[in-house]
Image 1 (cartoon, helix red, strand yellow):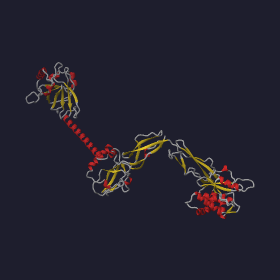
Image 2 (image 1 turned 120 degrees about the vertical axis):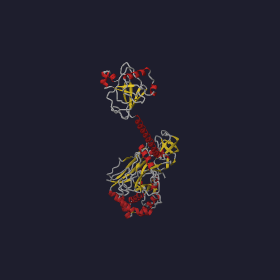
Image 3 (image 1 turned 90 degrees about the horizontal axis):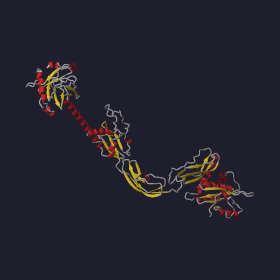
Length: 625
């Protein structure tokens, strides 16, 4: 056989290295014999080549006692033994032995190699070998024999690889089942659906009380208890499930639920057994009107435990509903229909179907009232949409007294409202006629226009005074106040108070023919002190008391004519129009001049030498009667 190999192509020897023949056992004991002749080997191959078995036969036949020539690319290592090669679908599959040679991987990598079976002569066909046992094997390289080449697949430790793969798969499946179980325990352990939904988000961490801190030693054993935060999501639910499993026998429950609006929450809500515990969490920071997940910490025998408090809202809100009138072009909120609402959480209201506010009409609407827990209730009401015909209303605009040199706030206390726009309407002030540096009386006009285009205005009088003038007024009021209080009471009408002033002035001021007509306040002070004066003094004292009583009055002066005396009196308005008021003592029997009309005063004036002749164009007209 060695001679046969020596006749091989020299180039092939150079490529593949020295040739070595490997034979199958030929004796009855099953031991291989490497001394069999090459001729017998060739003869055996020719006989077997006369009829080749099918692929299926190749797999089932016993090992054939034929020689196998393998051309190695290296010298055969002496430690290689007991390698089994099996024919599979026309290919030879090699299972690596435990003492694998160099060049053959010891892992699961498949190494593909080619061998030539049979006589290396190009005219000799190769045999199909169903199964055989070799005594030696090395990695070989491709060699052609006619047109037939057989590929050997080498698998490293196939049985071991299958075992490892099965183990890994088993571990993965066990982990998946375990993770799934923990997630289910963590998620389905919460009874309320809204609470389970909040598990997907971080829980609110409430602050600790002043006694506790993240690094404080509570038990006296140099221990610290940092807060543990729940961050939600898949990992958070897994952790919650794990805690439920390991804390079954622990003193603190993993979670607790409380209805929104609860006023008092005790430690007992979180404990599984009767034990002493106190809150680490500052429960004053808990707002139970806001549904959510809150992380609560408790101190049980010096150990910090944490639990979760779910503030849930399962109670629907309750409210009273009323019909509403709205205005065209001014939509109103659904909440406008509701009042006396009872619920512990924040509320929203919406229309089931949005109504039309563009034109006048009447329709039914359904209001949906919903709280923070998504509990809702429906109410039905009537909506009437009308056109706006009412102008804005200005309140608080009154006559005022201001002083030279001070800052004037014209809008102070003045409010404008509208039936359609509410208080969302601009207030305009016209002060163009006011000179705040000169004492006097000035008109100030307030105006407003609503979104419909309706307008309103109010004009008042701003009286600008000096500080000296105010001091004079204070002095006068000090004299008037005790007199006024002695002749009036709160049950009297303004007309009755005006008549009391009229009578007191006529009866307590004597006529002397003298007065200080340059300043009515100074003359009123003189008259009240001296209890005497002329018509101007009667006018001034009466005016001082009318001003003090808050009764509107206007100064009236007789028309000045040469050779005639001057005269002064008032027009007063106690709520039913302007009337003439003259408290001067006259010598005439018909001298009662309290609340006279223009016609009545003109008649009196004609009877007494035009005593009250005045310019009607300067004053408001009185009622006819």
